[in-house]
Length: 132
Image 1 (cartoon, helix red, strand yellow):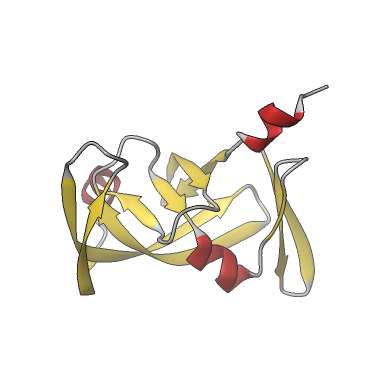
Image 2 (cartoon, helix red, strand yellow):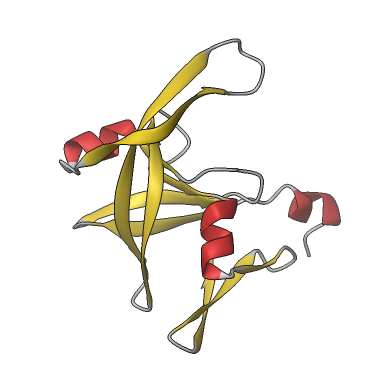
């Protein structure tokens, strides 16, 4: 049995398919943006657009800022039952290939069960449960 402290620190990490590639993905309740890894976008040759409102992003307190200047519409699948497309800011990051945050959660009406570390999404009037 997991302790409550362990559950609180769980993040939803999974694999997804982007094109024909298996990629790492994180669903992050604390993120105000959906982001895609620059190298993923480049290697798959995905078309980007200029960000309508470029902004600076600072990771924690390391003092380094990134300027977010581009976006990509990224189609992805999780398993056999969930396909989606999400508009992402394009940034260099090491955590994963795709990080979806609160904008994606809002758009999909995703419901998080923190104890089970699952997300439930209604898709075409069917419930899809995403789990690790």
